[in-house]
Image (cartoon, rainbow, N blue to C red):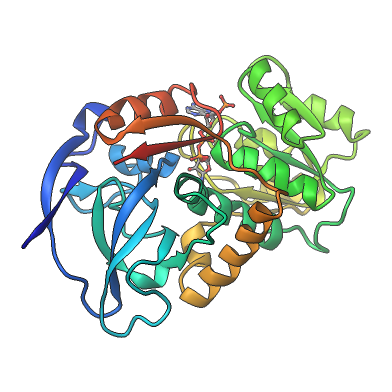
Length: 330
Ligand SMILES: NC(=O)c1ccc[n+]([C@@H]2O[C@H](COP(=O)([O-])OP(=O)(O)OC[C@H]3O[C@@H](n4cnc5c(N)ncnc54)[C@H](OP(=O)(O)O)[C@@H]3O)[C@@H](O)[C@H]2O)c1
């Protein structure tokens, strides 16, 4: 019997209207692959970049980078997963917006019993991102308890996980968000201060909060609208991790500015370098699972959509109408 899967894909780059639900055959896993039956699928801003073509991929393109479910079949040479295992992943290649798929096993880890599928689907890409940002993308000399950092879009999927993780590390996370209600949410999740960057000058507020010193690190996923002003929030030798472009791509930068503003460091990291091997993925996932199972981080799912409502899910995400994480239910 040939299995099939309702799958969301695009045939051309463009708006949410290009997202089409199609029925595709799903085969057996080859060497190094598994077949997973999804219980829930995570929605991420990177899915928007891939839909619009900002991050180009070959067409037609099945979208989605995050999911959780049960392993249905295991290919040759896969030792860490067995049929029937609960599992979750954040991974390349895209294609998680579906009922079931065949995919590389090296991106997939077993999901602890204590973590529900929806939570697993919502947290893998976003939580592993917070893991590598706060634990592995640090300024010179590292981050110590009491240090101030600035985290943009702090009421979003990545953002609310970061607020809680930073609190667990003893950091003073200064949040920015696009409404007073979102600022309140960031504060409730562990931010020490919150700035509505649609109505307030966040550079001035950061300077006031830090008695003029600035922060040791800025984590900026907003991109075009915030990048230059994020540099102005840093102490000398501070680090700007520019890890996203929700407002558009950052323009080319005159590197001399980094000298003028205090010997600053800038990095443009991506999760996919960090999770290139199963060993790294497992180590980072173990850290994330421990943060979640001990209650230090709770993964807030504020939006749930059936798979056939995926276009609405994209519209809401792009309209800044969401908070916390969103999942698709196949
Ligand atoms: N490099 C990596 O490894 C990596 C991995 C994961 C995620 N990311 C990036 O991290 C960011 C957060 O991802 P997420 O999936 O959790 O999304 P999200 O934060 O839930 O949603 C994006 C948020 O960005 C803010 N934003 C600011 N300007 C915007 C604009 N012009 N249009 C739309 N949104 C705008 C909005 O919050 P406000 O209304 O509060 O401003 C919006 O809610 C994204 O930029 C994503 O690409 C990067």
